[in-house]
Length: 261
Image 1 (tube, rainbow, N blue to C red):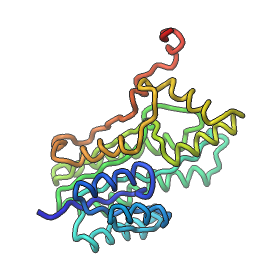
Image 2: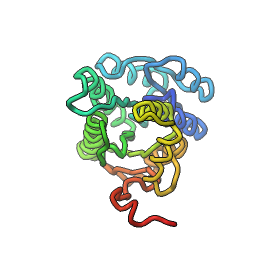
Image 3: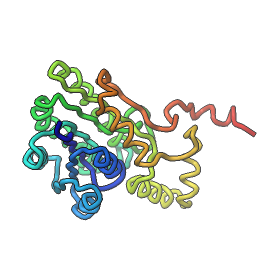
Image 4: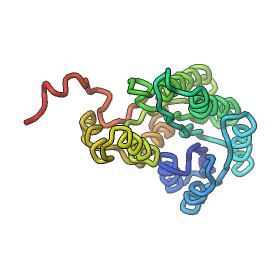
């Protein structure tokens, strides 16, 4: 039986890099993609992954990734749509360029990759996993573009699950909470600057809303993604799996009423 071939976008850092390492250890042939060559090559040096550098938000770039994966390994078994950006701002304050960039990266790129990837996945009766966010399910200050695109992305994946189930495709969504990644660190620094405080103080305030009292590691997100692509999840299709340490169950308005002494 030939090794499974898994394509991961945003594979140079964070969850994508952790997933590439995990799957390579499990015998997958991994293809990682993104816009920055250096972090991708660093992950490839550890995993033996095939690297594809490019802009996936246009048809040429998206098709090139799928074509490169098939050229390198002859097939695609799994497509993990993980790449994303955060550009904060209230609707009245957000430049159209920031809105469009968020839509292009968080939604259009994933549509295009699914468009060109699905014909290959149908051949292998493969899987798509979309890495969305709990922002798709809850609102937050200045998160209009990010939340809107992540919610639309989750719904896109669920529609793919419905439309292609009879062709053997499974498509599911993971919604992570806070993860200790490069993107999160940048957000903490921006928030600390805006509020004239420290990153440590921002992080402490954030964890008040996480019942487990800590952020996730990229590795903790990689494992549920890998599970969704495994035979153990063979009857899981169109699901939204929240991996957030319990954040989404918290009623913020109740925090001051019932706290431990």
